Length: 236
Image (cartoon, rainbow, N blue to C red; front, top):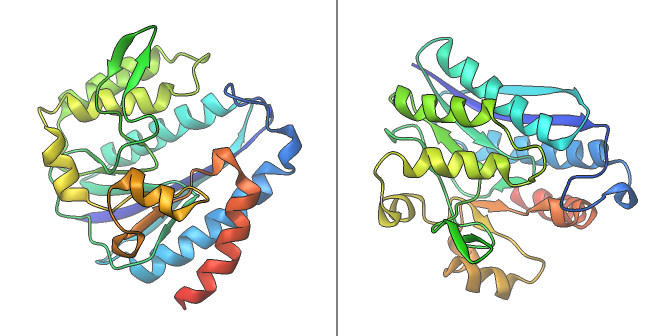
């Protein structure tokens, strides 16, 4: 059985990422590449088992295409032969040993912010999980994949959260309860704000117990890279 760590990073021509224009942040691709390199280093150090890195890259017009392409790359890799796929965003760092290869359902690993997706006073997703760390096991059902394909074909290019909404729909379509996910994945995607005490409140746990840190670089890629530059050497 093949195990893959999948990473993706695209050069996005349009600096308008729907939720904000990021043109003032500088060369986004270079900054994210720096974060990606830090991320790969830490997973090489802490990801257990026999696995192979798959890195997907290229140039796209907008951020939605980057997310959509990532879905199809993972989809096609999974369908190319029996395998388990562990995907992590470029703004994630592994800081302790982690072994994801034995879970039997599609997994995501922590709430995002906001923890519930509510629009016009309507609850869209009650338990809204973050897409920065996710796992596609060889035993994942074709029903779950089929739902994903249907939703991706009808991608909403006006909503930055489209990828995450689709993946949440896939996650909760499997009959899982919140305790089934959080009990398994505690601190596998520790949400990092610039203020660690705030982060610990959000995650309801201490940062010292975290296995993967997720920096949410879409909020400030420059600050994220600066922190990574200073922190990663301490893991040597």
